[in-house]
Image (cartoon, rainbow, N blue to C red; front, side, top):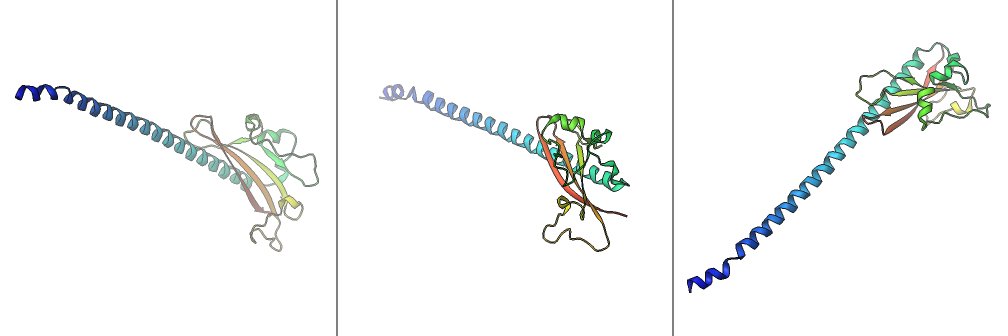
Length: 185
């Protein structure tokens, strides 16, 4: 009687151990796939943060350039200043078109480089468009919820700066645009 019970149980241990082994293998593969996905998401998050930081450095550099500039004559649509990414936008000039911000050649030929210690594929670049004085150009009248209202006795020059930040791979870009007003002396 003992020998017949033993013969009935001989294959059960093998089947149970195979089921446990397959379950552990599936659990391991799922963990590997999830870890790979998490790693890719963390890399993308890092890339996004770096691009935004680079673009912010470009905005700071553009603002510093505007503050250090003594004259608006630096901004011209033609000539050597175009290579510096300095443009003048006049509402009466129907031929003016903003630079193509999404073309690589625009950033290599018509922009300035911001200096930074960020570990990016390339240094951030910026271009500045002088929109004119608030009273001269309807495009320069920027008033959002009362912000930017004209102050008596002051002439404010308005600028639009656009920057491009590049991440570590050079495959993705972040564009940031900002308006800046400067009191004329």
